[in-house]
Length: 461
Ligand code: AMP
Ligand code: ZN
Image (cartoon, rainbow, N blue to C red; front, top):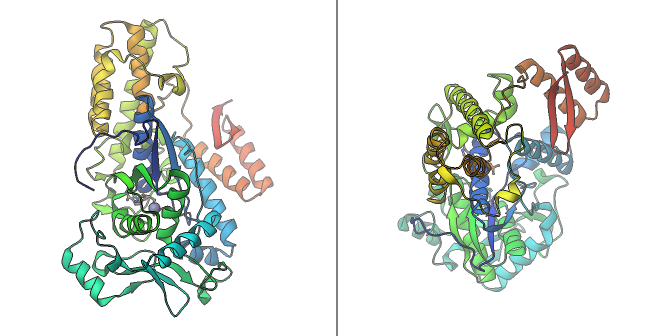
């Protein structure tokens, strides 16, 4: 909000309330989205490894224009459709070693809360029902509208005086306008509507985050985050809704990582230039950790251009770190020993020669500098106490959420990963015969697959 770097400390002195706008589950989450989710995860980890407790809330948008439209073209119910894509999102998050949020509320699971908030806004004069059974937020009733995105005052005046309305969930900056809180039922919504004081309808996209952050974090909380595109209109609208309905400060700090680009353009479904973890596993055979490394390799306030070369460098960097880690473990008398558990590292450790890497992370989450310092640390790690340095090394890895490859274990080749993914898809579709066939083919190639809570692991036979 102030464009300053500020000290991030829990307002209640105990637990840092952290809200992240989650995925809209209408397709696979692409690695562009994951730049944001991974950096949000690194921020949480850095806080926790630094001894700050967090309460991390991240919603799932399971009803909006896009989920309704695409569930219909898929011939599935909204629930079936969004649950399938939510499961895939969770699998990908697990592969990327992202911590699970403490609360993961859904929009459909919080319809009464959204209705209550809309009622409060009408009562306080910040919203009005329209002829078609929708309810709009009146932006002229909130003088601070536009402050976060630094909207042009002229645009704002125009929006206020023309009193235009935006019914779509997403819109561009040149259409500053009263936005929809509750959408009256339209024929294209099909069965996706709920009863409300204004008739049948459904919530607009912006409302859910205000309702859910209030429910789980209260009227004022420490930190709110989403990709740079969410500043306007989404976060501007959330601020307006929450400040006017609940009266608190809403989010005290904001974290908007910048976009991942492909060939200089934003990665998005509509531009058809998106990569998923699965695409990258198939070609060029990249592991999720290589993707994670690449995503955190630049400062969050710089856009990052996605390239296969970048993935290749990530592979080399991870292998280098793995070799250094082994050497360090040997020196510390910890060869073959599991690194300290995340929970242990969060109790506070002496980082030895890796202190500068943690300092870089604590200074505006400078992941690029931290990676540089991590390498520097490995070159100095034989100085001082190897045991201290070994723990410090793992504290930095834990803060970055990196898991190093086991160099002795062969990496599954792309065709094996492909088969395992096909088996996973068959299982999701309850096609057990196809799943078994894929398992048999894997066996022929010398691999077996072990199922876990959030996915699978491949092991050579
Ligand atoms: P969505 O599912 O579209 O609501 O997006 C989920 C998250 O991904 C939001 O925080 C977006 O701001 C973020 N996001 C979308 N596209 C990109 C991109 N190309 N690079 C980084 N973050 C993105
Ligand atoms: Zn949101």
